[in-house]
Image (tube, protein in one colour):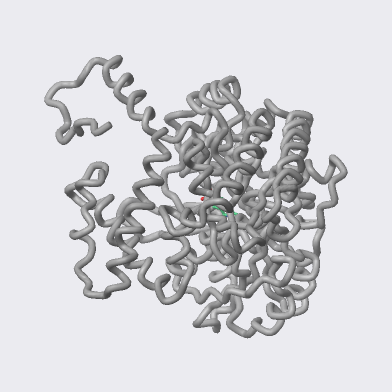
Length: 486
Ligand SMILES: *Cc1c(COP(=O)(O)O)cnc(C)c1O
């Protein structure tokens, strides 16, 4: 499939049609998300919805949300999205916030806000979060020089609240909970955490990036959902990704605070810069007007009724798939997921779950593997309704094949993931991934294929173990990208 790559800006511009046709060709090698054989990355509602989002987006395509006074239209949209989301999450009149470019920006900002909100005597700030809280908080800790204190999960895969109490100290700037967590789809005990947070006077951020626009509707449909939003005393902020289950265009998330006392610590103002007095509400400078417009538009277009209908479809399909999984001998869910996100694992020594993933990928599914515990990830969209039966059939066959062929557990992805889930090999993974990234982003490769990502190039170390892992890692990585190109 190797296509020639363009290395120079063409001397004279090419015809519009030719450029667009090239663009379209590139996507031929991508994962085919429109058929729904994927359980992450895209929240696709179909061509009609996409077309609507594109129209809304392009209406404010050139506008910039950096300066709220220049484009009042965007500030109005932002304020309305914030207000509607605050109401959805049961915030009172004081709840306020900003739109951001995505969940990661919301998570980064929440941590930065609480660092600056904390008493200036705190010189070594710490955040307390569960081991399953989103990795974006590690990124935040890494960027902002904050110590992440990861709390193990309890037997229900929730953050262990007893340990939270023990770990709070005078350096704690906030507690972070998930509603639900990305890896297992489990909602932390937000009410208990709210009590702890209030008692110790530390802020509590609820990462509802996944659940913010879905849980309220699932609750209205009558499913048992523990309270996770501003109804819980002690919750001081919530992040909710409107570009996930809000079905907006990518590049939009919402970050809400209980009141302006918290939000004001988020703002950045510089009065000395030669470019003039500069103020910025969020992490980015230029903010895409299109993302604001599409987010505003989708709330109005779908309405509560639309969100409820999607939630109904999603939950029915989720329950069907979960029932189907647990009916397959050797498989079980990880904990008791309450929304549309879940993980499942093997409880049978003869069924290596990573080998099951390999077999599913051979059948054209794009599978996300997780570790600790070793499991596969699922995230249901309305479109999965049509392919749930096919998925369960393929899953059942895959499990049977793995059971009948022990060697599958020592091949391909299964071998690689089996190895990296074991210490000390895990420590080497970081090095290996760094090398892979250096190849991916280095000056000489546009997109690596098996030749350009030669194993020799990446293994200068003498370690025998490393030499074993590297080829497997590369192979699994390349298999992965190949699967994506189906
Ligand atoms: C997706 C997600 C994030 C990060 O959001 P991005 O939009 O991918 O940057 C953070 N927290 C949770 C729970 C998520 O699911």
